[in-house]
Image 1: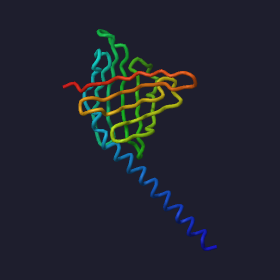
Image 2: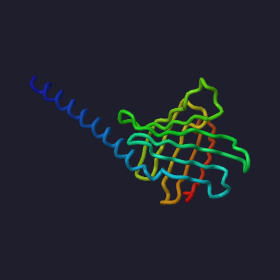
Image 3: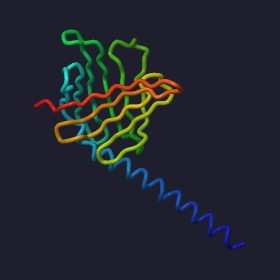
Image 4: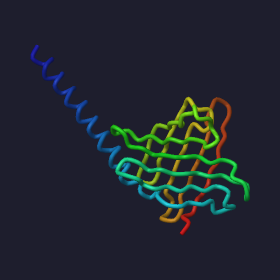
Length: 161
């Protein structure tokens, strides 16, 4: 009978330590993604461009533009936010109506050089991956992975100086 309180105490302590480790991991990951800051342009044809800036200890804001050489086709407002130890990526297309809300992508995994965000509810994209290649290059992969169909675009971006 005395084992039950010991087991319950062990279980509670393990859960607390695990949650604290996750919280610290999110903060540490957020601190290490400073490589995303900067002005990035598609090396091949300059039709895709992202600018990222850290505004405080928990927010990066960005803008993404796609164009056909002269006219801007799509412009998106981007954010990566650390809130309550959760990292979330948001994008909002400029042309959307006032009632629209930004699409939220949940941080799903990372190492020091890769960030993966997913939103299984979203048709396209439902996965966004940022990869730090070098100090002057990142990869942005935008994809839809679904039953029987895959749409994938990958851009290698170079830091614009």
